[in-house]
Image (cartoon, rainbow, N blue to C red; front, side):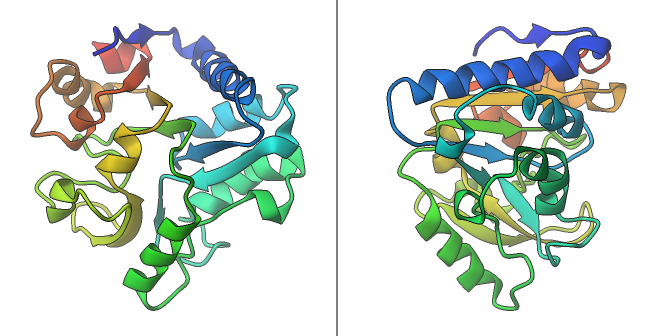
Length: 221
């Protein structure tokens, strides 16, 4: 596992946005179009705002999502809504560049299967987080989705954190990505991150072994 980056809280936003921009530039140097898959949450929100300030050929970047709640796209819990407000709208990206998970659909399994069809063979740059229980994306401890090795996207139900139904990328997609940043902040994540960094495979986040973890001191402990 790559050594974690411990960043002062006042610099975490800038360091995360710079990391994402550098990895996008690396990918853009080798191919015409690149993919960026993003997560929701309060920790990455300011990093997305900072990322929008970077000068990149954004017209060559396609945006995907790591996971989503089964809610409409204008719902307060929607990851798409968060990313749209903090990154997509400031950059004025075209709709053709944004591949959102359709959380408003009633047939959740079909929605997941359809989203899998939109994914590139390999995601270039991915941002994930970690919950206090060690989950990442919407892959929760003890859930059958942890053992999925064929489907690239799943509709999953979990009971630890509302809303219960989610759509998520699976481990094969995350583990096969070109560059993965794990952005984590706050004392509440300290115990989970200690176990992840020790390689405790009972925690879902430990399975994304290609992750570059970036933590504030409170999360690192």
